[in-house]
Length: 248
Image (cartoon, rainbow, N blue to C red; front, side, top):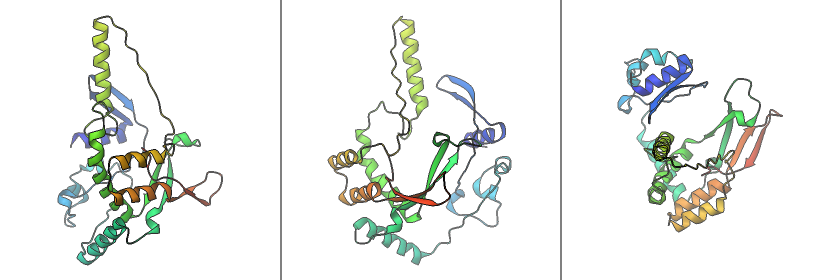
């Protein structure tokens, strides 16, 4: 069993996660529900094998999931070609798709009986074509943005994480204590940051980075023209709002 699988099994069985990194060794409570997705080994699902064999996932871990859904993708060269042409037309601007700008937000409680907004996580359900196109744009834009990211940034950077920042901070504090120097820390917690970004400034910065005009047009549409549905707490009907697709 891999280290990742062991961590999942521990979280699901003991409701805790053990951490031993950057000089920190501890066990943290993990009251959470896990929704996982996995691809078969080699990208092809063999019906002659069990789910555990296809995913190379131990039975002990797999049995901890209450529900297991198997989704098979039947290869179809004709349909793949139609989808490819549709995505290329959307990117070129020669075709529009209103469904691409629609999504459904679902609030998942962090703990049972949660009633406050802060105690919920939101996930967005959108069409497969939208996910595919946005993934392509994200990879194209990332190549332009990556050189602009400071080396000190650890959050939302591939290959880095908060543990790296904690390790650096701990090292600095230890060295300061050795020479009896004061260390001044400034902690800023940005809460409820979603939908509080100045979208016009983001578009301005992306323009200055010379992002491809077609990519920029789609990003603008996702910010300003998206229509989302969510379930209001006070009623059971679905309300429609125009709100941005992503926040940075």
